[in-house]
Length: 60
Image (cartoon, rainbow, N blue to C red; front, top):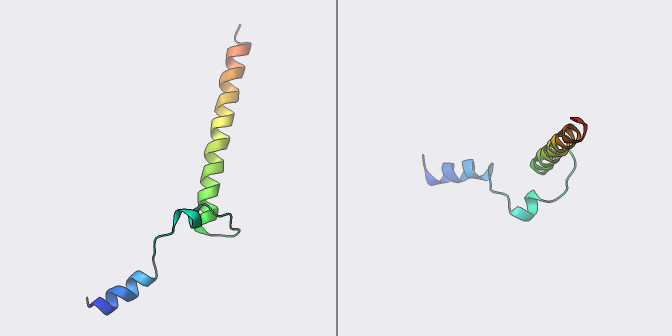
């Protein structure tokens, strides 16, 4: 593979900076997928905490 072909292949995939990953963008973007994952984990932690606390309170 020549260096020109390698450069063309690398143009389609590039690393995103941390400020770009944390930006709030709408649509099907990598940023939206990152925020979706963060919110899913936050929701899971909240639900598990509520279940744990309610189990401790109501389990005589």
